[in-house]
Image (cartoon, rainbow, N blue to C red):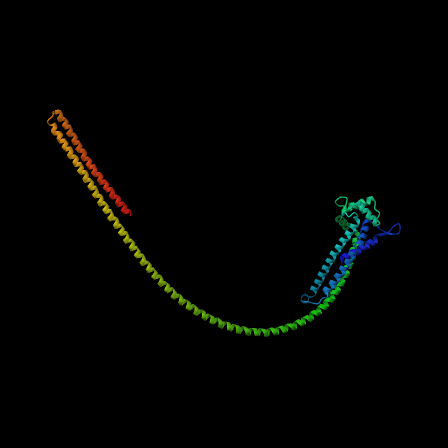
Length: 407
């Protein structure tokens, strides 16, 4: 609605901006007015769209406010109706504003396209002067520079669509025209508010009457529901009592069966435990008997092996002793024979030398001394041989005893 009012004000401004030229034809007073005329010419479709939007907003508002009362309207009353109406008006106003802005953008684009004669997307000073001449506005070089300076914000020497749109929105309205537009908008808004309030009052009365009728219908429905609920509650209580009785009986029967099953299971468990204990005791006794027999057998076998080893050691010891005695006897016989031979030789030499001279006696004495020394050597050799034989025998006996102990 605001966009429609602005468009109407723009049209009035454009009409008032025209003045008669030298040839009697109307001419725009400035470039701003010429652009506004071009926008008006190019935005005819936008104006029609705004009118349609306004009509749609009014129709939607009427449909929203005049509908049948529902549960929310019955509960909230007049305040809810007013809030819904206000929200609908604001929504439709926003839609209308967006549509008007889109129409305005389209109109500005159309005017920009008319100014952009080479289709480059930008307007230079020559194109601006040609467009002003087509609109019937004669502009000097100074005027063109001033207009380009106002529009060309980046100083590129050309005006693009964004700069043109910002320039138009910034300077399209003069201060006096803005106040007139505001007054017109306020007047239109006051008229629309009065119409909306009157329609809301009528709808409120209708809704109150409908609410009263709905309340009566609701009270009757509640009475009917209470009666049905009481009857249904009695039936449900009776069914619930019968169901509870059946469940209690079934539960008692189930408990009795469970107790019987538990008793039977306990008896079977006790019997199984006693049998398992008996089997375990018998198995332990058998294991102990087998273990005792195996231990006795192992001990007897060890004793037998020890006796065999001792017997073998005794036999070996006796054999070693006999061998040592035999060797000692042989050695003693050999030594005696050698001693007898030595004694015979010594006696023969002694007998032969008794007849000789003193020198021979002396030599014989020396030989006798030598023979005595030899005899001492033989005795010493015999004792050493006996000691060696005894040590060898003892070593063999000790070795046999060590092997027996190891076995």
